[in-house]
Length: 179
Image (tube, rainbow, N blue to C red; front, side):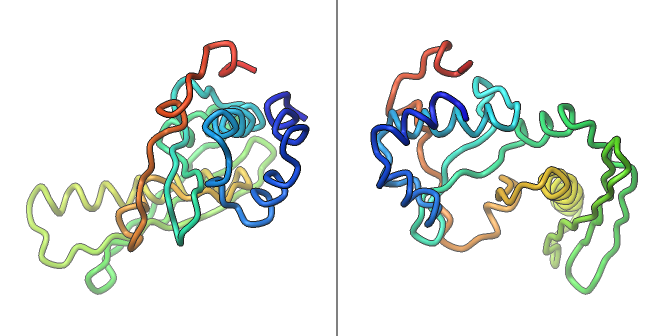
């Protein structure tokens, strides 16, 4: 078990219990948020200095979501290859299916869908690229066994509110980030 998570457990077992049972990080102090953030990064082999996660309030709970940096590092660290991408128009939605494979042969598939009705030119092109990005990130998180929300999905969730990063509330030294 990582040092930062152990520190939270030692000091606040009630808070840790609440965090693990409800998934709500709001009750953590800024220092505990940094510790938790670093522990998550460490457990996944991600570099916290690249800010692979950010906080969001979703359904009244403060939680982490994966940024581009997270999925790119996960693909590299786990040898995830996106070996096939299929695209189609279904009604007013552009649907992209991304297929991923791990070095051990395990495969997964996930979709990215965007609403494109009324979009023309560059807006339509950007929407299609967004669907590809969503599909690749979703399949990466899925094949790595993670249930994190991806940043490309944030704008499609009503009442989702990005929140300041923990380092805005507490100073995270380089040494803390590397532990």
